[in-house]
Image 1 (tube, helix red, strand yellow):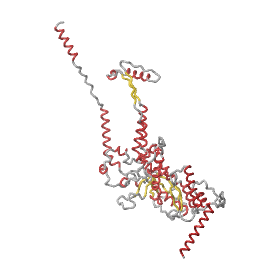
Image 2 (image 1 turned 180 degrees about the vertical axis):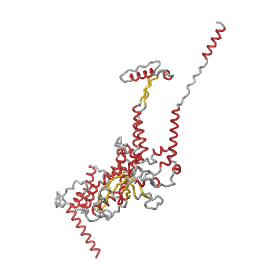
Image 3 (image 1 turned 45 degrees about the horizontal axis):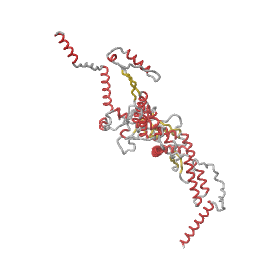
Image 4 (image 1 turned 135 degrees about the vertical axis):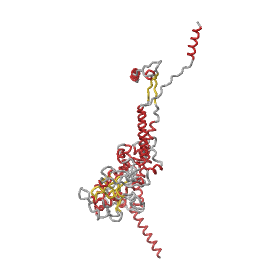
Length: 535
């Protein structure tokens, strides 16, 4: 080998031993369209944050037609100190989307109406209203006079006016929107409502409400009404943040003619922003429902695609800008062969088949917890909200149901004033006067089973037997009481029949004779004692 050849061989060997320098990867290229899209989104978010402070708590503006034409430009008053700066000091409005998402801002009646189409928002309000009025009320009278005929007429008038259904509908709308109103059509002789009369106060007096005046009751959604006059500068004024009148689709109506039902009042400073409505149940549930819907969809998506089939193959052709047709043809053949009843053939040298699956063991618990969390703002037991009963040995929802019924019983006082006013107006319409001894009570919400009723009747019978034997009661009094009991199985008893004398097996006096003799003997002892004391 010549000298020149040896140098050439050494040069080739040195180059072969030198470390390979990796090729420099191609730089990332960001398109102009992507840059413009991101920039526009950033500007939109900044604009929302800048203007959102003024829009979240601004006074509510009604839809067209609610205010009369001459008042279309009028706006309700709001505290001047509660401006954007004050809102920012509260630290609540750094993120406007979060404020609405967490229920910190009034979304508007139109948005709340849209939420009513979602079962998770609708069912809690419906269930609450139904359970609140399910057992309804019981009319009663005090005093010594028999007023059963009056009570029957009042009950018939309540059924004609459908008071129970109207109160249920109003409570339901209060859950949807935060406010509901019942209009009392009183004293109108024609189908057209007198505008001048609607502006006057509906005083509970015969001079204002004559016999036969009550025509109907109508539930009005809050989107159709708007507050008119109220005091906003003197907390000592009785009309402070309490509208004296309302506009209902252009008609001014005195507040006494509208039974306004608001279960969850907001602070006075927020009332203009809420159109003098309260906090709706839908708004309270918003973050919980959002979490549930997202979790439900995520679990569904994960179950739908919990397993991923992976084919490790040569990707250099498609990544280097080669023809993609062959690559997608290969994937199509892979999909056609990937079946439990087929054979999937792969290249053992250049391809590898793998399956990656997500664990599904705890998804049911995560989904159940997200669903159960919706019960927190509503106070509804899970069995009421979803119909799902607790699982496990001796598991029961009875405790939660009793707590819920106790809560309903406490909240019944919110709706008592509206029913009391309807009762007074009905009395004026029927009798021309209000009887202060006639009122009502809410029936207990607890449902007694047949077995429990039988046990109660047995206990009462044993107690009455002891009282009759001791002379405290007579058998006739026992018969009258069990015949007058509500849902009594002895309602058909003839109380005018003479009872036969009870006869025992040994011929001794029956309990009634024995009790009567004991009662007469005790009376004689007391009389002799009084005589001795006098001497």
